[in-house]
Image (cartoon, rainbow, N blue to C red; front, side, top):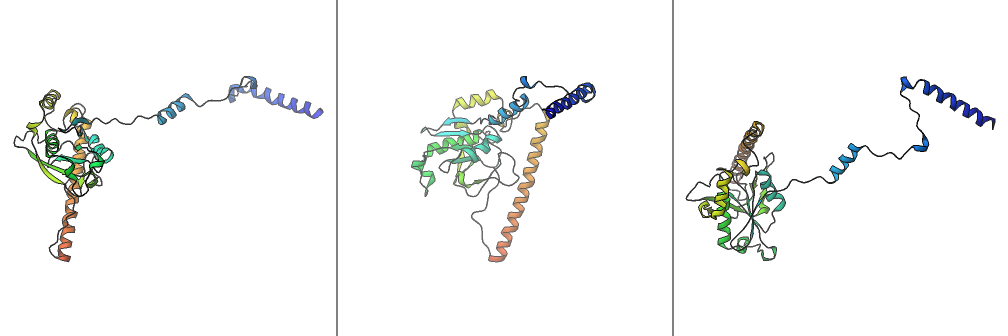
Length: 263
């Protein structure tokens, strides 16, 4: 009992000294009876909630229908084009893009049950393919070509992303066919909407996801295009060197599976 009294006296002396020097040490006496369970700071709770329910970027595809009722997706910007190729597209779909110019990626969708591995194009009639090809040219920089423009057609499984390529840029291992898209044959409703948007070329206004205001984004686009050209030139050089080595080694041979230019 004497030891308990001594301990209480020692605790009282320490407490008194701490209270006396609280102005210098910042010591505060806490009442244990009113102590509550500590909660994480509000800012930390907000971060946890945002991390758990973070919103993903919404795609802004144009959703159209072919003459036979098949779904057609058309990218509005580079992010949409990437998503169409590597997130949305299935092996049974058909991918299209206007050849040799910037433009939207077009995806013609179908039912997997009717897919034929030996002839992938047999699932579509010519009318649906032509309609999608017209859209590919209409939503590209070749839309002013009155006589039409070439459209590259491929299966999504043959689409790949080159190393260092900017968003929306892809290459093909193999083409399925080539069509001629006629932008003047698209429905008048699409023409009127395009005129209302005020964007004459693909990559202007809503087509690329950028606006005319903001010089920083314009500089980024210029830098991205420059990088794309450099990577493409390097890729072509490597391709030529590889082809020359094969010719020297095995005579005049060609690689049927070589990649095409970027789209």
